[in-house]
Length: 294
Image (tube, rainbow, N blue to C red):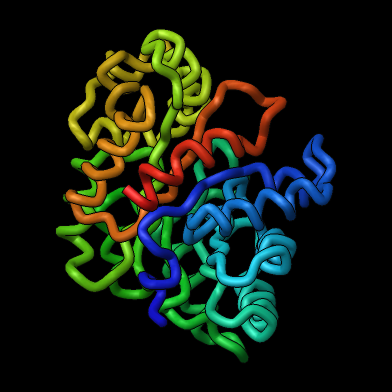
């Protein structure tokens, strides 16, 4: 079974498991295992682990499930040495063959003290993964790619791309760069709220962090937005473009746009605006019939 088939069409993106495994103000309990098992039972093909996870974060989810793909979305290359990652990947592959996908990214200058020459750093990191005693195959890794050069690297030195905070229009351009074969698995933000203003408020609260990171703002400007769209938490035009806000039908329609633009798989991130509810199981249940079965 190839990577595209294993992932299926729809997965979820969440930082909840990473925060719990790393003890970031949350305790990992059996509820996290149960949530992973339910995600699998609902028919989602993958969990994309947000929050800059290491390989070890995938282990409990893999143990709690039988067929779910678990992907890092993304592992920060400045945090983990390539040789260590390759060794960890090989160990996971022996225990859970074919079920772990290594997503890699260069993060952002404001978040990494030694950030420099990110494209070259990624090229070197991939070379180190190739040179490891147990190499990570190119087809089993994807890159957090936004601009043309990183998308080309995703095509040439990895199995594809996992763009974050993008639109269907960006997906179409990414597909044109990648060509027909490589995996294109964009993250898609959704807010299940039929009150548009309330939904936009939740979206803006979530968006604040990303509008302070130049890799994202540069890509949004490259995608046709203007500086005014990035001010004040994001214009309605920006929010409506990078979030699907509404009921199940609105979210299903946005998912269809991404798939029609050339995405193979969508990593759907449900934004609730409620930090006390890190695992939005109710929303995942509501969306499964329209996204997976629809």
